[in-house]
Image 1 (cartoon, rainbow, N blue to C red):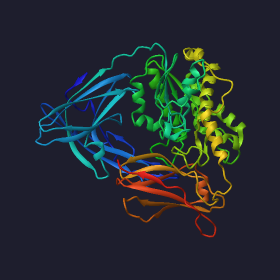
Image 2 (image 1 turned 30 degrees about the vertical axis):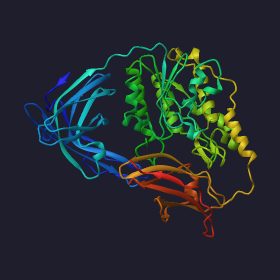
Image 3 (image 1 turned 60 degrees about the vertical axis):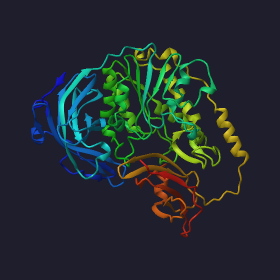
Image 4 (image 1 turned 135 degrees about the vertical axis):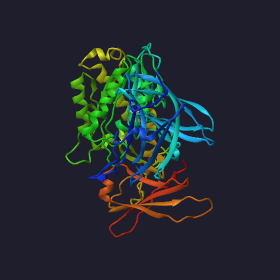
Length: 552
């Protein structure tokens, strides 16, 4: 299909004319897209050899800096199309005497972020689209994405033609691949953050009969095992919504084959209302999970819903509970209604963590003593109830293998995996973890400073727009009534003063494992440290210093 003309039959005016409602009851509401609220033909100029798309693009960042939204007013090219994968070639022209910049979105997913068309030039822009909802909508927008700011950017894009053709059909592989679409509890990690481990990082170990300790903690996205290929596409800080909007699900759909598997575990970040781009209300969660189910099945792959792995939530009122229960119930409901395989990792993991109790479960999650891993990112220790140590990740990956082996639903859907799932009866800590614990216990001292903030660590640094956003974690200090976060610019050869950038009450700290922070993305390096404040107003000993590099 090649389109060289654009008219009211294949155009739709898309825009965001109403202001964002903003924060309401702890949830941020962005602008909502409106379609056909005025004539799309007003935004184009039809020529003999090309059509001029006149558009406006801008970005809004909500007050905490964590919600970044791109908006537009433009005539979108829209057609109904079968659900499949396609190759798209957009031919752009430039009849002017100066170059122009542009970017292209398909169904709100950024496909070509940085296009420059020189004076008098024609340029083919190629990308893939993965259609799930029976429609493609292309927006041709001014500027490179990096240029789009809160001040509205107006410009013209000259489109000569749009060609859309089916991508080559993919055939089943020699052995099935398991694609993992999830968050930081599943993704692989490297040496510097050991023992931090996602359960997806260890899953390959339970699809082969022999046990090999040296295969543990592989920081690999793809593990080609003897019977099954693990494609770990999980990434920290994403939710069911943002994984789609960032094009990460599309990247899976481009390569997933018939009879492959798409394992879908969401909930941890969906429930985080303080991070607007991630948040998905429980009532909307099924809509996003349905998108994953449809996307997999349309390509002949088998969707598998995995309920969110447990958090160490002993400190929550009412005793230990299954984590993210509202989201879990949505998954259970969809699985029953549509005959989708469901692996209830949430229930299975919660039962085991509950049995371990408040102290025993610290070995599962990232509760580390200062000096336990002196050469990595967590040399100062950590108290984290969400992310997993290697020992916990091994157990949870083993639970996945066990749930596959014991699955009693429509077993035919797991027929290619059941014979090769090898859950173990016992899993111990690795020699590396045992040696680290033994070493720190041998050097433990009772002379520790009880007022010092320990376990200070940074996670999930992202730089977008005017702010560098990140999470800070530290251990609570007994007797503290509040905490002060200090920041100073790191300058070569200068002693820069530190300033208080945030003060938190004990209650605010106790309700969150990690807390969101932001620094101006000026390219500077900032030093952060935390002090505890006591009832008499005095500060305790400061934490170690963490450097935050805001260079883009």
